[in-house]
Amino acid sequence: MRSGCSGISPWSTPPAVSALVYAEAEAAQRRATLAEETLTLTVADARAALTLVEEGREPLLRGIQGEAEAASARATRDEAVAERDAAYARLTAVAMTPVAVTRIDDSLLDETPATIGSVIDDAPTVRVAEAQRSAAERRIDVQRVQARPDINASIGIRRFEAEDATALTFGISMPLPLFDRNRGNIEAAQAEFRAADARLMSARQEAQADRAAAVARLAASVSRVNAADAGVTAAEEAYRLSRIGFESGRISQVELRVTRTALVNARSAAVDARLARVRAEIDLARLNGRAPFEGAQ
Image (cartoon, rainbow, N blue to C red):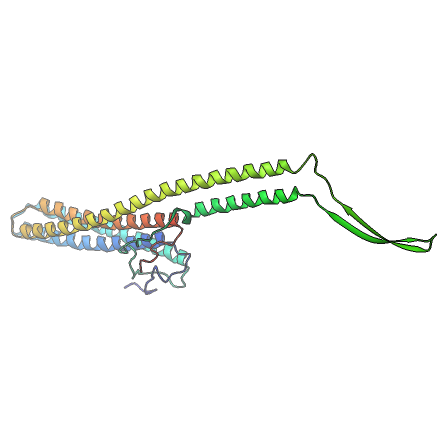
């Protein structure tokens, strides 16, 4: 019995927790569970093969093969458990939880990505380009202001000792930019603005293309999950029928092994498909400038 943290949720963890780290830990947990189930099935098939060997219905070689498969399944289970524990450790470090994570209760792999509409201008790269364009536009106004004459006025009092009189003095100074009206700086600022405007246009086009590709990848991953689930259902039924046929002596151990292997591969593919869906959702969320699975719960 494992002890420690009662579990961790993707919706209650600190913002520093990466959704991908959480999903990878959950996938490792599922693979460990699948490896344990595979070991159980393999051991059961090996025992059934030994029973048939003792009854003389199968050669001794079948029993030896069954034991070898069970030993291989144990090694696979141990490796999956080690990878799961390593994934828990990574999640604990990223989440900065005071107690080590030993179980994941809330599933992120089973979450269906929420369909949230967004515009291209919401992309972080576009926002940065817009800010740079606005700054360049303001610099043009600054240079134009600096081209205006700087008028200075002065007032003072002057004392004439000889006449024993006091006079009030007033003066105005204004430079006349006859030859230099700050045109060089203004043209440089305008050129910088045109470059920033071009970068903004390029950023919008790139964001649109990247978002279209991310949406396509997410749609494909959703279809892959549906196909994987259908494959698991078909593989489970095929293995159930093969097991019945093997116990009744209608099919061989080789055929049973094939259907069991197909079931294991189908279950593993379902986990991989869900992890790919999470990765696709994370990529799309990054391009849209939002949190992954925002609005999914």
